[in-house]
Image (cartoon, rainbow over all chains, first blue to last red):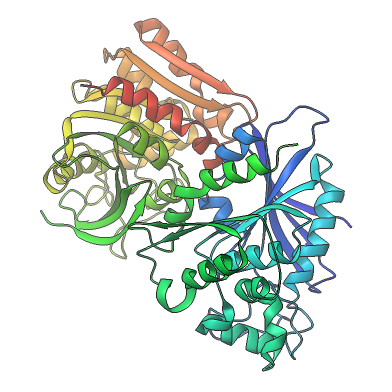
Length: 280
Length: 280
């Protein structure tokens, strides 16, 4: 496994890098960013994953997420993958909510998507192994995961399926239940086919109903978010967590929309929350 | 004077807005951004101006500057103008360092630039009056100015020419002396003609040599900045300030380049520095 360094820049005493590699999971080149905070030589640092939302690449949060100051303060590595495979040979959809930029963190089973749209395997397995191999200061025994919107769905579902790997899970305005919204029905139907039993591994509320358990979840949600009622539906996550006895902190943030202005505002809180749970 | 609101988003408890208006100074529509932090009704807040560098619009710092958390903490308004007039009718140059995106904060006197490239009057007079009229919480008796690269040059020169208006002045990697670098020679020669006596009002070091005085200046400069030696030349500002008895804090920052990763790292320091000097 080798990676190509696209750029590195000093920031808050650490290094913000952007990297590319040939992915066997997706069959394409994939680009991702990693921020490594200042640290003592030989130190091992916990890793926070951030999964981005529809239409995004690694660059949105890298430019606008406002995470570096908090990561430097708490000494955590921040990894931001892309949201889908890319390239002229990758199938696409005319909508912004399916195909490129909209991988939904699933392993597709339906043609023509199954060959490339394997973002579950990419994030859960391949990129994690790559980070472990290429960033020797990354302590893969201490990982947390967060994300925004589609990436919030990704963080919740990947976290719920892998509770031993992720010490903490949070999300910004996540799609709480793809089974119960238009974005999810289109994406999971397209990638996984009509049998909704196959969707349940990719739905946070269904995973919890089916027995997945974690100690705690942190979710921030703007109450002026234009996608709140039709797509995000945090009340479904609240009901699922209440029924399962999961300690969900769901903060409805007055006046905030779905943008990175919302994310940057609460990013330091999330980094601190994860850092507390990632202490040795 | 009226303005059109392009967007507003809640961030860190305040409002990040982007606005457009018909400028009489430039004869074009001009776009700018204003962040108003959370504040008590009726409160009057100081104003920090940020002038951007070559190729930038208001959007670069608005997206990547990392100023909102500090502005919210200290209760200061942040104003970010564009760097030049824009539009199909505005003359341009094929280089990135002259014409659109490169107004250099001068009032051009040479054809074809003189009709539109009047960024000195725009920032010093027109936009200041517009902010005063449209943002009643802005306390125009308490202003500070900063900027990056070409905009650092703008902040230094506008600040040095208007010491009664700006309580404090800082810069990130400024062009210290347009008279003494290729960017400056091209821009000031193009906008102002060959008589270098006319350039001196747009050169921080010349302004100081010619008698401009302020109490203190804060400058951060990355020592890995690719433009440091040929274009920025902070040593010229150090010499001018030493000769004039101006208290210059020039911090050479190890490993930092010319990018917004550098700016975001030290932005909170600059906001705090200005806020301290803007206290009632």
